[in-house]
Image 1 (cartoon, rainbow, N blue to C red):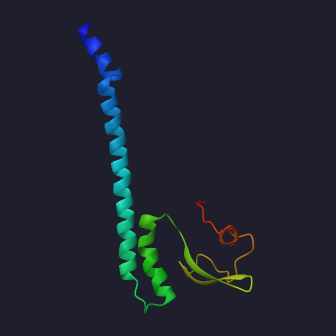
Image 2 (image 1 turned 45 degrees about the vertical axis):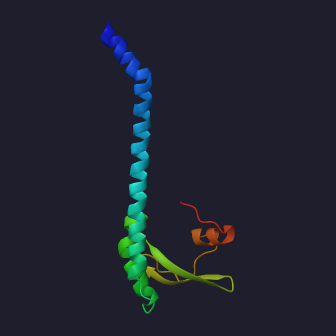
Image 3 (image 1 turned 90 degrees about the vertical axis):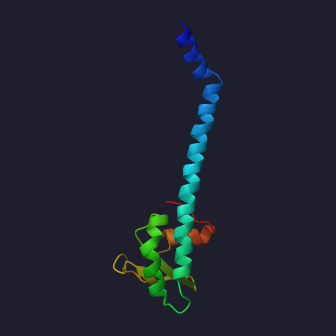
Length: 119
């Protein structure tokens, strides 16, 4: 009977609070480690990019490492001029063959709302 009481105290008392604290602490620590890894990848990208590189070279280099930090299948640079949103460079280059993005595209939604969100 004493063993059951001791077990009950562990589950409901101070020991339980300590366990919850350590479980939460471990989760937070894992999140911080993941965030640090993402920041290291992004920092490496900024060091790798050279001002004298072409847009295509920058996208190629970025696309090699970016999916490690942010899940993506496609990376592009678009310009907005006179109400036209045009792709200037894309990786992989055969992923998207259009030059001008349609007005109902996600890129246009981001421009109109001035806020990017995850799909």
